[in-house]
Amino acid sequence: MGRERDTRPAVLFVNWRDTAHPEGGGSERYVERMAEGLARRGYRVTIQCAAHRNGPADEVRDGVRFRRRGGRFGVYLWAVLAVLRLRPDVIIDVQAGMPFFSRLVARCPVLVLVHHVHREQWSAVVGPVLGRIGWWIESRVAPLLYRNCRYLAVSDQTRRELAGLGVATSRTTVVRNGLDEPPPVRAERDRDPTLVVVGRVVPHKRVEHAVDVVARLARRWPKLRLEVVGHGWWLDNLRRHIELRDVADRVTLHGFVDEQDKHEILARSWVHLCPSVKEGWGIVIMEAAAHGVPSVAYHRAGGVAESIVDTETGLLADDFEDFLHHVDHLLADDAARAVMAEAGRERAGTFAWERSVGEFEAVLVETAGLRRV
Image (cartoon, rainbow, N blue to C red; front, side, top):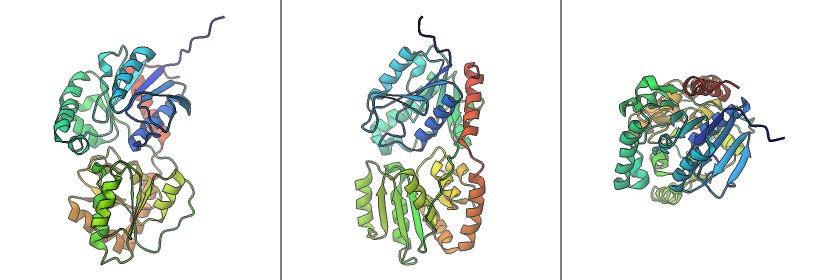
């Protein structure tokens, strides 16, 4: 007898990276949580992403098939080939600035997943010339190519930014990030004032702003420290900035740490800083909140204005001086931190990945006509 045909609906995510990639982060975690959730619900799920040294070319993990092919640029060609070869029932084209152009060859519905718009980041990552080309593709070419497709966003802010590119809000559904339940920790809040930054060390994350905060507040807070959790290609530049500001004895660069150690560091910190230019949501803001740690970020940094409830679970700043003032205020006001800690824990408890997966699946069923498994 021949092999029985697998009739489960096939979902293909085409994404630049996965969480095992050296530059993987929160957006990759979102994709994988959605993929794992769909796999648990009976879908055949594949993630096509770039190859890297931390993972094999082919792997099945938590019910999800990973196909790692190509590098920074070759990944786009391999994604097109995967669309042609795998013939999925629906494609999730994850656009981290650059589209995969899957719409050109797809014979099935294509949904576009956007964490945030990259206007401010293009030049910082690839320089002014290539940055203008990249922004032209993201802001002009992609909206035209995917003009008949349903969009998924992780925040209302991203939905509004997409509308500014011509993507009607009626075509965009917001499915927010969930949150993993934080593991039990041994750490207690440090006796000395401690700030923490968690994320990739790349230019647009602006970890230098956190270093500058420490330098400016050093005299007022003699025992102030900063813990930086994460790695990235900008690390040597950050080290030079730390030396330039003469705060090497106050800043700890942890590099990559496992999940348990990350939560231990968060749990002992006083305030979490997110000085990034732009975030789709900011998962670590919610992780910090789950440990009763308020966050400070910038108003105009995308989805952080939604992951932080300003003056309730953290503070949002208009510029660096405002950012500095907010950090100083939270360090000095134990009562304010305590109130925000309680509000943050309560709000963090309302976010769950399974709920987000249910909302994600509902969009697939409605838009792509998939049958629920």
